[in-house]
Structures are given as structure tokens and as C-alpha cells.
Image 1 (cartoon, rainbow, N blue to C red):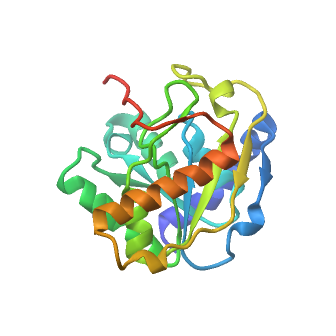
Image 2 (cartoon, helix red, strand yellow):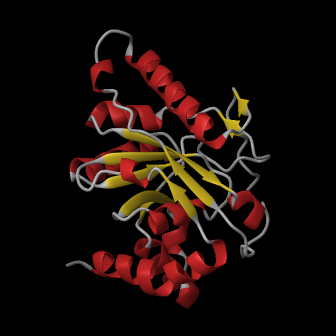
Length: 227
């Protein structure tokens, strides 16, 4: 067993998970939609930095997600501790600068699914600046069409209240996770041009997320925070 496989249960069940359950008392619905085995994509809205930690906490299977390369490359004891923490939660280091790096991120995500794993993604690409749901980027659709993995729409609720933008340490408060029925797009690999297929599939996924989250929808990409 590799180090990361040892770290994941340690972080989830011993170091981090128990504290999160006490602080946030997560209410979860639709967990029965998560298959016990086989590939699946969790496509969730994005309200706060802590969202990526919430899904590994509540989903019984090992959840993988992409993490900014900077989380894994900082120097010193603190940097090594941060890298270990993110790896322990299932994060995969990736260069998200765009171009070729975007294709490499897609390849990395596909390998998780091709290995029958669970991969979590925030189609909005960045945190919502105002609590509304923004247009999804098409990476989630390209991943679903490429691998044939089903997509579970997920609504994370309340994390923006316990960790508003600019707050590093969340405050105590209740959060929720609503998991929707699986969506399959295997039959979409014929017909419309690839770009149009990806856009249509992404929009369907975002509509399903909105139905669960009840957020106001904005048909434009969320602005990325200033560096």
C-alpha cells in the first residue's frame, strides 16, 4: 500500500474528519446514488475553499480531486505539512496555468476514472463570488464523454456561511450535501460536433446542480479572484 493510501484514511477518520463532523454537523442526502464500485464523477457547486474537503468527508469511497501545484511545492516544514495534508485528502497536484497543462489535468482525471475511482470536480472552475451558480466549464463533460463514467450532480450548502470569502479558518455552523441521481452521457459520442456536445452536456449538469442547490443561475463564467 502506498503512502497516500495510508494517509487518506488517517486524515479522514482520525485527524480531520471527526473535527469536521463536530464543527459542521453535515447533513447528507442522496448518498445511495454513489456506487460502491466503479468510476463516477462528482460534479459540485463551489462556494468556499473548504468544499473540496467536504466531499471526501461525506462520501464513503476514496475521492480524488485536482489541487493547485502551489499546494505541493512550498518550502519548509509548513510547506511539507500542507502537501501531506492535501495528498491525504485525495488531491492530485496539477499545473492549472492552461494550455498543455489543461490537457494534462484532463489526462490525470481520466486515469482516476479508468482505474474505477471517484473523481470530484467543480465545473465553475473557481468559487462563486456571491453565492450564485455560474456557468460551467466543459472539462466535466469532456471527462464524462471520454471515459463513459456517470456524473452525479452535487449541491454543497452552507459552506459560504461558515467560511465566507477571505476567512481562512471556518467558523462553527451546519453544512449540507445533496447528491443527485446519476447522469449518463455515453450515447452522446455521436451526432453533434464535439465542442457543441461538451457545451450541451455541461449545461445539463449545471441545470441538475442548480435543481439541487436552488441557487440563482448566472449564464457567464465566474470571475477568478485577483492574484
